[in-house]
Amino acid sequence: MTTSPKYPAYILGVGLTKFLKPRGKVEYTELGFDTSPSGIKALLDAHLNYDDVDLGVACYCYGDSTCGQRVFYQFGMTGIPIYNVNNNCSTGSTGLHIARAMVQGGSAQCVLVVGFEKMERGSLGSHWPDRENPTATTGMMMAETRGLTDAPGAAQMFGNAGREYMEKYGAMAVDFAEIARVNHAHSAANPYSQFRDVYSLEDILTAPMIHPPLTKTQCCPTSDGGAAAIVVSQTFLDARPHLKSQAVLVAGQCMATDTPSLFDRSAINLIGYGMSQRAGKAALAEAGVSAEDVRVCELHDCFSANEMVTLDALGLCEPGKAHEMVRSGDITHGGRCVINPSGGLISKGHPLGATGVAQCAELVWQLRGWANNRLVKGASAALQHNLGLGGAVVCTVYKRADGRANEEVSSEAVAEVSGVGYNPAVEARGFTRAQVDRVRSRRHRSEWALGQTQRNVEARF
Image 1 (cartoon, rainbow, N blue to C red):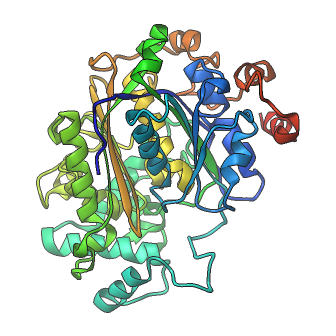
Image 2 (image 1 turned 120 degrees about the vertical axis):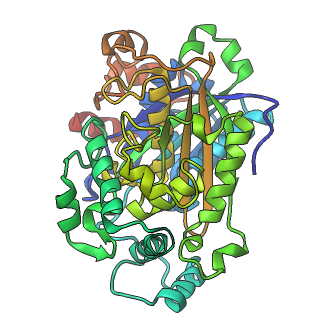
């Protein structure tokens, strides 16, 4: 489903925490407070105070039902509506979709979207063993068509899709390994990545096998982390003309769910190929952009196999030729379209509720020209793909508000306008107590609601 383009919506501010291994050391309240472009860093980036926000969206999968209020109340208790969103791995971009719909429908002028996740170590599992798993029918189809192994369920499902792509189109195990190699290489330039190690192709291929063709370094880790974005209306932006140079237009967006093709016995369709294809096509059409025009894309690479089949689904290559795109070097700098300049989920990490918002932040920094150590130069449109089994996918196309292609901006120039005093695209730093005071609500703040969060965040920095 796309939303009406009658009233434009813009991303005005973004922010991130560094993604971390899940060790239980950082509370979700700190993850939401620290990063949220809707939180401290984002409000600073947008040059706003929390009193300017008239609606909040909290995105997380693991937590009780009003964790969003607990996070937002730290910024202020202004009485605004706050939505709590859980849509599996597409939770963050679902929050962005809600924010845009609210702005386009006239229900809000300034929406703060905060994604955060405090996860457990190891592969994902159900927290509700006393009831039917929502992906049970998907798992049953996998068992019937491809059998079961001792590998984590998600690795089996996406690995099987990779196998089918090999069987149908001639891809090889080395092609999936090359996708992971590229994403790990990209992550070295991203200060927020959970892992910044660079691997050779041989390293990837000889890593422990999880489920063929997927080795360990081709599978995303679980992560603790947070991200935020501020979505505003044209009216809101027009009242602040000095901020237009940093605003990024949400030019096209579509959220889709599965159709009966999910259960047509294809391992590729079982991981949401059909909904990704429909959402990508609709978002690009709304934005007036062809897939050939896309120079930079943040794609949901939970496993290298998903990147392979999704390159195909989004039309970034000819049908059945994704592995040829990979072989020709067309998914990295110097190629046709840079996929996951952030390092992607495989290397940056995957805190479920934050992932979609973090993808947005990377593409905003790309289009502003701030990501100067990994910039995809000359990009005028950026594509985001965020998928969750069960299922839902959101595809979004971003453009600069001025309609021009991006140009590199020096970190010194960014520091003068960023609101945090440095270039947040290339440095994962904190903020000062004075900066926190500047963006928290002036009229409706509560020190009781803030508790020890600020002190704990300051201690980490």
